[in-house]
Amino acid sequence: MTTRDQDWQFCTDSLVEVSRSFSIPIRMLPEALEHAVTMCYLLCRIADTIEDHDGLAPAVRERLYSEFLDCVEHDGPADRFAASWMAEVGDEGAEHRLCVQLPTVVRFQRTLKPAVQDILRQWVPELTRGMSLYTRRRRDSRGLVCTMHLRDMERYCYFVAGVVAHMLTDFFLESLPNIDEARALEMKRYSESFGLGLQFVNILKDITDDLERGWCYIPRDVLAERGLHPRDLVHPENFSIAHDALGPVFERAFVHLEDGLRYTMTIPAEHREVRLFCMLPLWMAIRTLVHARYNDDQFIAGRAVKISREEVARITAVIEARCQDDDALREGYRILTSVLTPATRSAATA
Image (tube, rainbow, N blue to C red; front, top):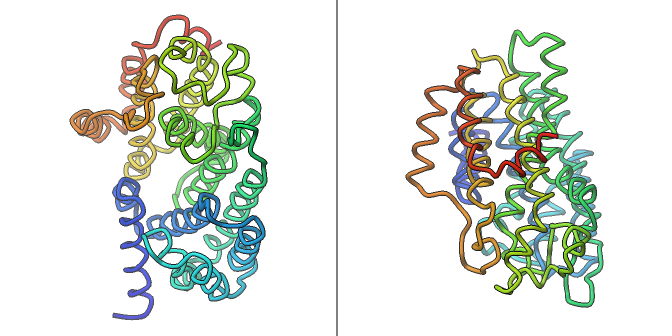
């Protein structure tokens, strides 16, 4: 086995360790895209691990960001970041091992086509710098860092998910044949909403998890309109008001997911693997959004807001059968979202 093969084996093993759910659709992609998207995911996961590690002093976090950016953006030494991470954090756990093994990831990344490397150099730093902006925010008197309004929430979602969608689109356009300029422009038009929709759903289903680590991505002003502080969401006497307060966030999520559907259908139907890669998480997100609306489990720690394994299997079977049929996808989307209240639907599509 060559060094490159060994490096790739580490990357695929790490992908499974840090996210088994994402590793499955990535393996569906043609080889060149599988390589590119795996690099995208692993590098972004390292940036995310820097953001999420609560034990890092601000100055240390900034140094790690800087060393990571130097490596990704300017082909600087990956060993320097790896040594810093090992000294400050260690390698216990899959995410931390991944950080220590940045040299392995980068060594494989630098064997890819120059165009793919250029895409990574453009977008991974954009994501990293955006994340670093939000980690600089101060906690309020009740120990929380919050987004301030819907535009602020969308800006955060742009950095952590919209950027990834732009990166994926550039990979697709670089790799897939027979995409004309008009179709390419449509893909670029809707790609950001594809990423934002998925991230909105993650935020809405993970409210209590985020609160436990001192974050609230639900906009402060949306809650304040109903007299709520984010810490008030977990009190049962506030659940009814909280559901009403979250209405604008659900509505905006719905709009982004609808544009996300347009994005996936813009990918030529002949590229079935790429459509599946995009459509499966989109469909899961749509169903999760419907499941989360007016669901008290959103506000109860330890209650996972997720769809059942049986429903995941059903959705997967439907998408595998229909992913190349746009009319069937539109009808399936209509049925999937029909349980949303008329008020929610009318506001979301206004």
